Length: 111
Image (tube, rainbow, N blue to C red):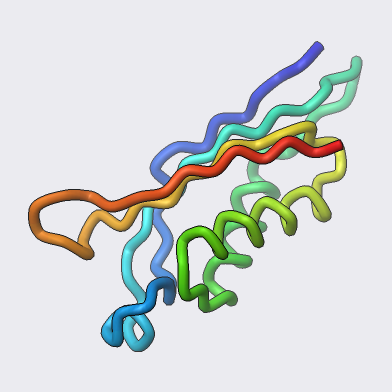
């Protein structure tokens, strides 16, 4: 049976972006993820470990573009959690502009 872990509104302060202020001061980002895996009897994917891995990975990396962050994060998650079949990730920057929230979403299927 296939299952999806849903991770919503994970708030992380990170260096991400190309603007000068984004390169110097960590900004709040919101991460959303859907992680599909094959659930066999007695097996599970630990969502606490998944969340902790994502937070640590984003905080230690200093991405220029959201595209780079999404691709790198998906690759790193698959390496750490090989049971994953696919994931959808989005990163939003709620504070970068005053009149809207900017974000990007990526879909990743693993073979």
